[in-house]
Image 1 (cartoon, helix red, strand yellow):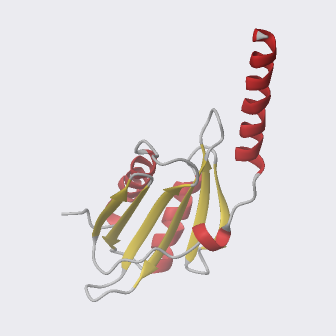
Image 2 (tube, one colour; image 1 turned 60 degrees about the horizontal axis):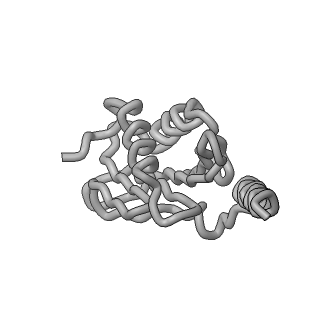
Length: 150
């Protein structure tokens, strides 16, 4: 009886892992421009959004974000491009392959152009802070191209 339960648990774990890795991405949900009206941060239990004033032309900023993002392990572009002004990246966790989606764009605001980057988990109710860590890490690497949050 114990062997059957163990076998059943293994089958369920493999099926769950396969679902996480192979299920299609809903681009209409995740590849959407994040919205902000002013610089600042917004966090939920499974997402993080940062908006920062920029100190260079929007295309240069997005190219810099793209360079930083693609240096991040297990990260790839899944929608958009720098030329389109909106890029969505998928970053998968090392062990289980859980996907997080990070979208970057530059928008106009009353105070000038803002770089807005939003990271969101696809599965679960909490991302354990990984989206905040990733977005803030990217912003740190951008250095003087963005104005730090006050």
